[in-house]
Length: 116
Image 1 (tube, helix red, strand yellow):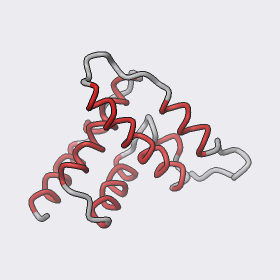
Image 2 (cartoon, rainbow, N blue to C red):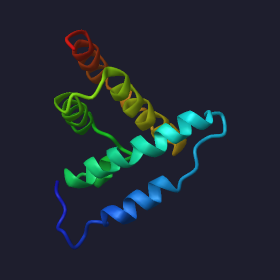
Image 3 (spheres, one colour):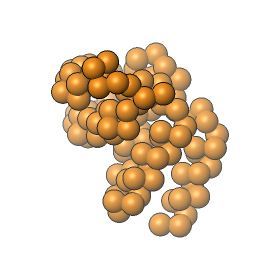
Image 4 (tube, rainbow, N blue to C red):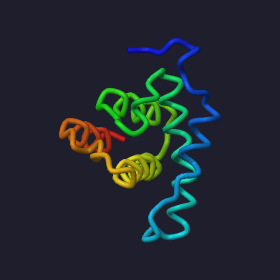
């Protein structure tokens, strides 16, 4: 499942690639600015977890660990929602299914929100 260090793209290369991909025009300037802030956090997390393939093919375990990390770092519910919205939007933008297709992720997130 993991990558050898030689095979893995660098964090800079992945972040630059995904940061330079345009967002749909329908998004407001402030939303695009938020996504420019949040997207590199998701990319970095996937690379650090040695799961760069999860950047645009988010599996439920990686996504749930990411959200757990945000909760442990005491991010506000609204900020976590913005991260998730950014991840979903980028998936759709590049033609991938939303990571929220996993019902258990949605149920898990709703449960976490109630207990914050």
